[in-house]
Amino acid sequence: MAKKFGKFLVAATAIGAAAVGAYYYLQGKDKVARPVEDEDDDFDDFSDDLDEDEGERGYVTLTPERVSETVKKAAEEAKDFAQFAAGEAKEFAHGVIQGTKEALAARKESAKEAEESAVEVPAEEASPEEEAVKEPEAVTEETVPVNGSKVETFLDEEEEDNE
Image (cartoon, rainbow, N blue to C red; front, top):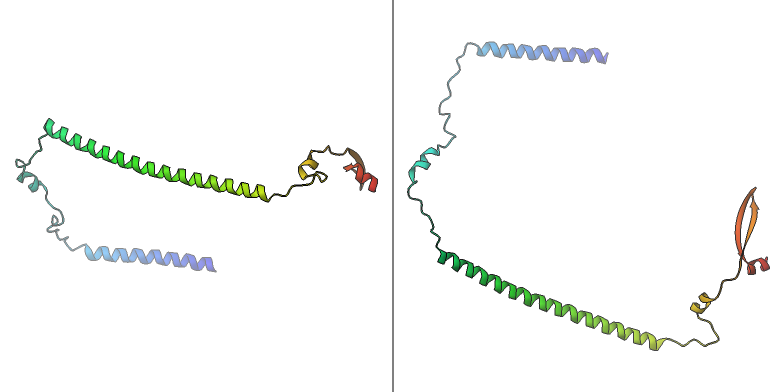
């Protein structure tokens, strides 16, 4: 039912649009189109401006003396800026060097404090580094069946003795 109603609605809209279009066409058929007046009001005519002052334009003459003066001024400004930049870079580098020196001094100070606070280990007790240097005990390989599959395990001799 919805399809039939949709088709009816589309057909009615199309017929109504055609009827309104025909009505407006027939209403305006007998009228004469009025000419557009003053259609150039929105546009400026720049051609008049070009003709007025063509001969009065002034030019700047460049002489070698004037060019050399400009170049000298630019070179002087560049030299001043380079000296300023060099001074700023020198100050920055000095600050970095001072900061590095202070950091190194603090590092040395903390290393001395750590060295002084370290407790000497008696010769009888082995340090962790010495234990790591010792040779590891022999490792053996065993195959243990687990749920029908073989699993390899690696045991130290001490663990075998404890079992």
